[in-house]
Image 1 (tube, rainbow, N blue to C red):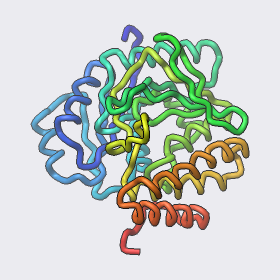
Image 2 (tube, rainbow, N blue to C red):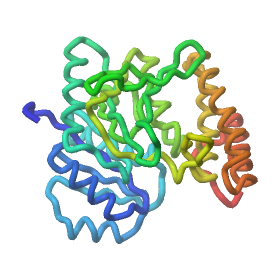
Image 3 (cartoon, rainbow, N blue to C red):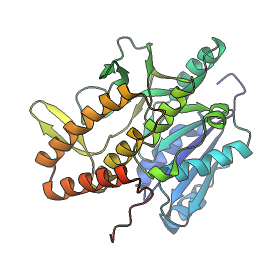
Length: 304
């Protein structure tokens, strides 16, 4: 990039597949000033990989245990503050950005900021090779979830929130809005932060010219002609628990609770009927709902 802008990438890992992680790091090396990999307790193998790689602008921050996505992101955000970064860009361990993705995102971020917009974040159009079409951006209108497709390759789409991987955020926005909610552990972390930023007058945008390969969930379920994303029973626990917790927040508009709640109800029925093993998925979703209503948050202690 021509501007002397300091963009710091934060990659959160948990027992990553080394080839996929190395592809991500190679793609990022020339796109950002510095890469911080915050690892959630994967052990010594990752340390040895970084020692062998020995790149000046890449740093590994190993955590002793799995503290969750939000906590790991916050560790990276604190490092970005210390290093006086202008922007952070978040990544999952298996994402693969296009060679010009960061440049495309920054161009839009710069233009929106210059226009006087309070910018929350800009994010790429991500491609899941297992699905027929690129997943669309999301915006709530009334009490309905409306999908915001890319009608042109250079379109910029107004959205309510962005998935965290590939999300470019001005560091000053993070300082004003606040860090990620560590009590959520995983799932709805990006949604909660994006909606919290929106409630404070910030706006998020999807950038259609910026692309990234990203697999959403595990192997999808084929339902008639559609391929629908599937997560593990444990991930479904966090998904439903954190959704219910979010609905209890007074600052979240009622119309958003109703719109997202309708989708959550459909997911509950669908995964109970079609996700194997059905009983385990049903039980973990139900436990998540119960804990979310009761405010039991943080990492699930699986011996309960």
